[in-house]
Image (cartoon, rainbow, N blue to C red):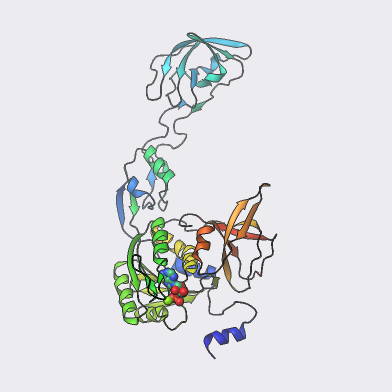
Length: 424
Ligand code: AMP
Ligand code: MG
């Protein structure tokens, strides 16, 4: 009996394959097989976008550096505010953002102040301009406003000397701004992991060439380029490698000498042109090669020399799903991200019938929306075939169906995982 027949005979009720790792086991195994890359560099702030800090950042200054007005209005002494009725104060001058008022402010006096301007030394309160009546050089304040209002305190955002970001923090756009608010011009970040990748398949035609009979354009290399770049990897595109042992062996060896990670797509299943697992066993070590997920069961993981090797499946949706669910956390760890992770799951009402058999974790493509009552609703994209890449581009989430789950009827609650970061 062939391998496929044996499987069909002994497991006709579900998709369970005793040789497969569960999704969780595979993810753990991949995470545990790698370490953060060594090597730091000091980069100008903007060049550090999407990099990961190699050392903590301490605040050289407080932010804000001085008490300042949160509103346009009038700065005064809280003690002058009326308990009832109203009070009339004399206007002494103006405090602008970046141009402080340097005079004194006595009892019964006030200063016109703009948002962001330093609060004059004698004042402890800012009253919104909408709450007062102005009469030439005097203002009339009714009872109501309280002492201490509308002031942003020095150090309210960041205190001097405080650890603002720890080692392992990824530099997001908001953090870029936070670092700039501290006046920092450079930061120390980890080197980017270097990832070499190639597609395999005699049918694959590079862009710019006419399609021969039976040929298809190579889409995986572009999806992979996009996901790797969005993650901030240093990418090395090795092109299309034909289904031939010698060329594949050479590609494995070349890639592993110059990269931390080698990723291929295609050639990992049990067809007669599927050489990846064999070659991995010859030039390196196979750790595992089957994961109980759909799409994406065949996935080869191991090492070649110093490099980690991942052989992703060839079907375009399978390649994206396995990258997102398994490779992404591993790469985050190599980048030095303190807590690698994926978006959290949350419940939604399913509007579609979902076919599913126990034995594999499934990632169906879904479109998530909030209905008028505020309830999250998800529908499956029309095709769930692992070859239909348009389903991936149309979706905005995965519908995650756990191992033992059976088919889902409309109206049932399912778990969804929104796309973020590298998807869609
Ligand atoms: P394989 O795993 O090599 O048997 O490929 C499975 C399916 O995915 C086949 O239909 C291939 O033609 C297709 N495929 C493999 N690699 C790519 C690629 N780079 N771009 C688009 N389709 C691919
Ligand atoms: Mg192939």
